[in-house]
Structures are given as structure tokens and as C-alpha cells.
Length: 350
Image (cartoon, rainbow, N blue to C red; front, side, top):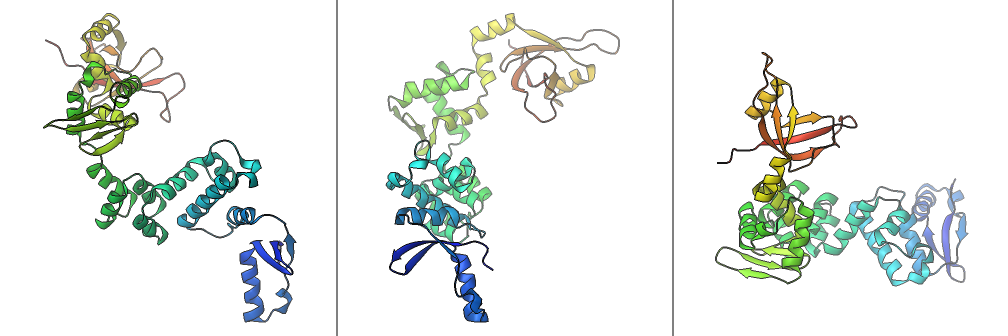
């Protein structure tokens, strides 16, 4: 028996259009025409008088009882977004707020997943979209491709990059500035003068100084173009946030603090001491160990800390200066109230 009525809409005298129940209809048609089960000639229906726009929307939002391909999900979300934006009067109950939030609630998906599908729909080029539709690339790969210019999407696929890992490697090699280019930009823009151990603050300063003025620099060493949102280095365009992340990998924030004479002097005046077990002291000194667990929250990134121990004879060792490169309280297994300090040995200054 058919357990759920088909949802239909009257289109003309004695003519109805199925809104929900296409698969039930197809299954019953097969039973009648191929297996001779005449009891399925008539199906229970529920008539709903709604507009064609709402009828199409309901098909997308309710017809999901089979395993859909990522391309099918993307197509449905794209069409639902189009209908909501084009005919807002038809959907008063889901107006207001971000589109991602509205579709996530209606389609029962996470907001991040909906956002990824809409990014694919908006940014994937024709050739890449065909590969996505045909199942040659999966959703993760499509998301990575969608973050590239369309010409680079084609180049990546032509080179045989089909998996997310391959595409990310291609993107890093071809579309991301190299470490040398980041350092050259750092030098040419004289970022050292406005850099801070608080890299969020540095990012804001860069946008105000170079982005909002649409700064451009073209020398024998490097080509740089800036906008309020992005920086282009030798035609490799990245957001300011990405630039900061790459800069942090090459020039960690704690080194910026240590390189500032005023900050360095202040840090020496406030230098903290930490006693550790003798074995830990030796491992830190030799580089075999890079972190220590402490039961206080008084430490911060980019601070200096003097570490010492008591040797087996009961004598205190020499205090060795380390820089705190990272303070971690989120790792699994760290008890509440404790911090894991990542450390780096500070070279002696002449």
C-alpha cells in the first residue's frame, strides 16, 4: 500500500501536477504496467493550491528520500536561493537573516555545508562544474576549485588534479605567494615599522596603510597591488588575513616583540621565572622538548620566561631564557586551570 499521499496541485480541469511523491508515482506505475498489479492504478493524493513558485520550492525542499549526489544538492540549494530572492512575497516565513541560515534551516543541513554548496554554485567555472556534475571531483575538491580563478580551475584539472589534496597542493604552488615573496613584500612595504605581536592589530594597520590607499609597488624585486580586501604579490592575489597567516609562519609574532628594543627592555624588567624538573630542563635546553605544562594562567604569548631546575646535588641550575611562542589551553587532555606553553630558546644578544 501507499503509506503517504502524493502532494498535488491542480493545473487545469481534471489535471494535476505532482509536487511531492514522484518516486511513489513511478513505483506504482511500474507495479501496474510491468507486474499487472491493478490495485495501484489509483493513488491517494492531497491537493494543495499553491503558486508554481512555491510548488517548485516544495519539490526541492521535500523530495529528498533518495541518496542525492553532491551536484544535485548544490543545484537544489541554488534554485531555492533563486526562488527566495526572486519571489520574496511567496516566502514571508523565511525572510530576514542570512541566506545560508535560512536554507540550512529549511533543508536541514549545517550552515557551513550550505555555505560551501553556494560557493561552488557561484564560483565554479563551466568545465569544473561539468566535472562536478559527472562525479569526476567530489564536494571537497569542488570547494577548493571554487576558491581559484576560473582559468586556474581549468589548468588544475588539465594537469590531472582531481582530489582535494592534489588541488590544495596545486593552489599552494601556483596561486600562493612563496615565503621569499612574503619576506620581500614585508621588506619593500617596510611592514616592520607597523608590525605588532598582536597580528590582528597588524592586519588592521596594513589595510588602513596600504589597502584603503590602493597602494601599488612595482620594482625589480616584486610587484605589489593592494585593495581594502586583498593584496596581490606578483599577480598572486590573497586576502589580508591570508597574508597575515603566511607572515606569521615566516616571522612569528613573538619574534616581533623580541625585536622591538622597547618591548625587549620591558620584557626583561618583567621577566618571569619557572622551575621545572631537572630532566625537563635538560630536554628543553637540548631541543628535545618544546613545551611545558603549568598550573597558572599568568603567562602570555611573546613573553620571556627564565627556566631553571635543581640538579641531583641540590644546586639550582643557571636560568635559561625562553620565549613563549604559543599558549594552549584547548588541547584534549589538558586539565582545567592548566596551560601548555610552547617555548623557543632565546639566543644570547651581544
